[in-house]
Image 1 (cartoon, helix red, strand yellow):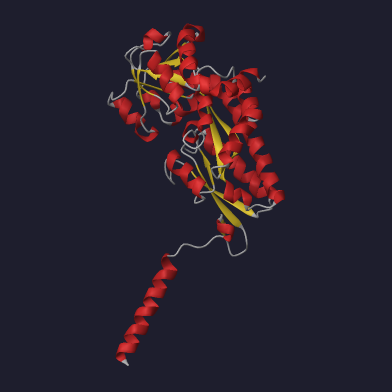
Image 2: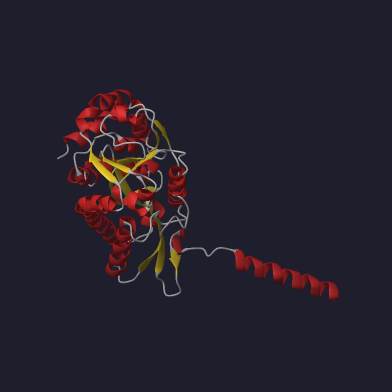
Length: 336
């Protein structure tokens, strides 16, 4: 009897442990169902709560919750709480994270055609970038991404990338010669700087401040909002307004999560995504001069680059790397 009792007790303990550690199975495998049927979705991004990413995420959350009458709620995880952009992009593909704000260059491994967005001096201005990404080219890229179980729910805006360094103001390719610079993972962008004679490398955003502080790299390039958000002005003296490449920030959603929505809710998610996209581009455009002034106040010396001085470098990049994306490049340049 004692042996039987011990067996029964052991079985009970095992079952109790299984119940405790087994994840909750979600309805349709997506979202987290509460007892009242409300589905909670997880949204990840990499920035602080003062950044445009977070403000856009809040607008998206508020509108989705309002227009679905609370059937869906969204929990936002800023500052890479759920992982790096690379990690959360993969998690969205697997369906373990529902929504994430990521960089366009992080999607190149899934769809190589996203590389076209990193071509130098491709977009004329914010309006050109907005109409392109929310038009035919954006639709083409998103459709290819859907084949990888990921879709763009909103084309958010990070802005045009600008150059900072501790050596001197940058006016021409010659000023970049020999400069150790951290750049985005876009191959076209790295080729641009290497063609200028710079020594380009990639360092994770979380390690960039320290790398600049220790002079592991002397320079970096980022949109103004990121320079402010990561306090790079504390370890960089010169800000050269180059606008050499545009960086979009797609808000991506697991296609399996999207497919679990009703037709009516799918329409709501896409409508809200488009509205938030417009807000993000307007905010980037309207805050551009304000951000420059803020960085001047922080002690940065600002100069403006004439893009025509980089024409030979740009031609070389397009000749070497752009031919494979010539159709998309032509569509983008023809877009008004």
